[in-house]
Image (cartoon, rainbow, N blue to C red; front, side, top):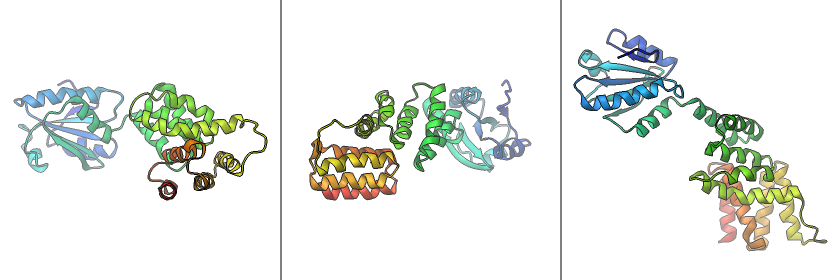
Length: 279
């Protein structure tokens, strides 16, 4: 086969250097194959196509098992094609048999994520720790390159909402048209509309009731970054009237839970408290 820098033939003599040592610098995917193996000729071109794709950063090492039987024994290859991914000298993923391209692509993305996936992962890690501004910058950079990336659109809206800017977040939520982002965007919209109303100013209704004042004050607290106090305020509104404003406080709280994520301690605590108030 034609040799590219990241598509190589490997033998027993070169395996240690080309696979084990090299995997400390870059993921190496080893394709154990044989010329007589029909499924190998189905899988091989898929792997080679992905290795040649600049979106991925890995080395494809081809091992002819007929010419290198000791490698087959060493790595317990009992059927071919057998694919084993190495990182830092260790096998980090493997499968046996020909697979459709989408499944092979999924396998590669787990061990050798594309630059866009790496950027998304970094931005997501910032969301988890509520570094909203830094996450916003990263998602804007991603959308400069991929203007309609659904996950970037949704999470940019999250980053903006985390800073209390509901009006600015709404257009990004409206652009989320497909699952699973659509469902998540719908859960965030009540929070975005609530914050947007607070940004634009509440209607002048003269003297407002204490419960309405508390409802509005929760938006101010959220905008200031005091999410816990905002949740307390909304929860207290529901304690007084669980149907207040046709249940809007509940939907806003659910939006905050969606923003923070299921694993967030505030989400877990206030989801329980909300359930105790409603049920």
